[in-house]
Length: 377
Image (cartoon, rainbow, N blue to C red; front, side, top):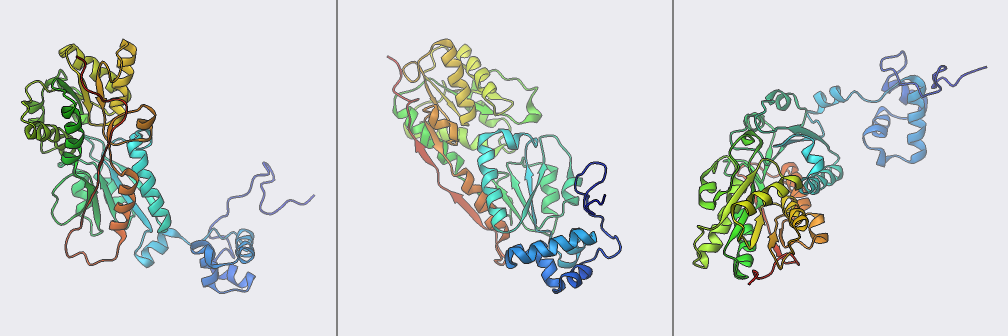
């Protein structure tokens, strides 16, 4: 009984082609099919340029001869292009697939990479990590740096490479490097004006502190004190808190009663803990403003558990407008998360002369929903 030469006699599973087997070369495949070597190469690298029938004939001949396709390392050395983009991500890798705002951003990155024929290499850079080796070894045509700390050694490693880089959100003010983001301070001022305009004066704020601060003291402190903590290292959170102070100053409202609770992670569970902490510190709060939707939804969970009606008993707001915000009726600030990822790739891969850094600021929009109302009498 004969066996298919491409099947394992023991398992029936397809054999993995063995590179370097006699006859297993691009030239041999071209000769067998009767086409040029360029046509064989296109079957792997530009399949849209061949008919379906021709590509199937080429791939069938390659499998028969044991040819596994062009060597990507050799191609990269020859063309000096990796056809890949690196993403230096300022959190643990799992966070990229769990946080809804990051998922939206990643979707925009992925779609733009696909349209431009690039793959995406994720390089995690959680707080306190020192993985510069991953950056230096990464075979990519450029890097997107997302939400990294100012003193992150991996950022320095990326910027030491000759390939272009684009910073998304933070760090701020890096000379000579393209930037894509939003006006975080102005964006948070939008929702702060809304809450203050409704008449709220006793306000709690939920913020995030980065992972290296997880053992830091967490009890609520006055807003002005919190802003001074780590201002340079964590510009996004500090800019959003400053937006509340801006709105209060515009209305002549003193900020002495604004309390801030900083939680170690951006999660729904931390929103629950933050709400408990703020309400224990000031039972007369009439509003809780979160710098993210995810933690704001955690606040809604805790208030529901306590039987506190929203917004009659307490106003709750967020920031980002992640997909779940609408279903929870959350008043928030919308930022174009998916578009931010797409524009980051477009900025990184455009062929303009790199004589000056490009700065792209995307718009934000206040979205008023059912979670905000004037304070209880």
